[in-house]
Length: 112
Length: 114
Image (tube, rainbow over all chains, first blue to last red; front, side, top):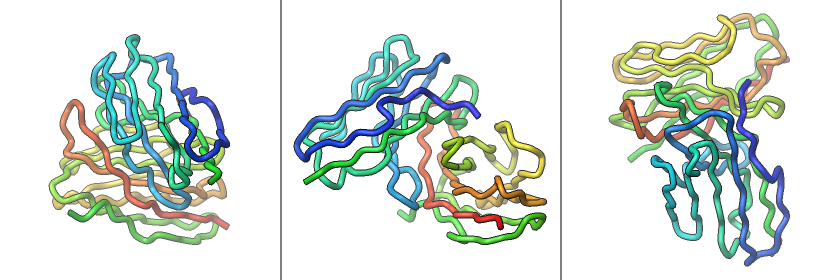
């Protein structure tokens, strides 16, 4: 199945550090979404991006929709232990409403 | 406002059996999408239903099917189960608009095929 290239695959950081992860695609997307998933649970929406170049924040999280519409990044500032989890990007193609293509995921571990 | 609910949360079946999973969307949402999550393939789109009609379909065999009821609740069925069907099955609901429509996920059903 199709998956977006997401990097890094995993990150092990100290509490208080900033984190950055990104997703790239060979396809142009109309929408980029960032989700966080805890073990055994469904993904929880963090940030939604709808326009190329858009920069959106949600608390300590900031995400951007790439100008080419083929990439997106997510930054987490001043990480805390509850940020631990798997982060997924997801893109939505034009004309394929609600058919999300997900990234491979970034596992984030935060050491207190 | 209640979130997306899925039942059952856990299921164990044997090869060759069939299984039906249920999803109740957020009130007011008319679109329900289903995804399969496995360690090897990640999150893969199965299909989407909107107003009782399948609107999008992923690349899965015909053993995977679904339906949606008039109250927007959805079921997916997997027939003739294979070991590789073991996965977390997630459903997501949204209003179903043609653009900028945000999906919210349920907790998933963990299916184990023995």
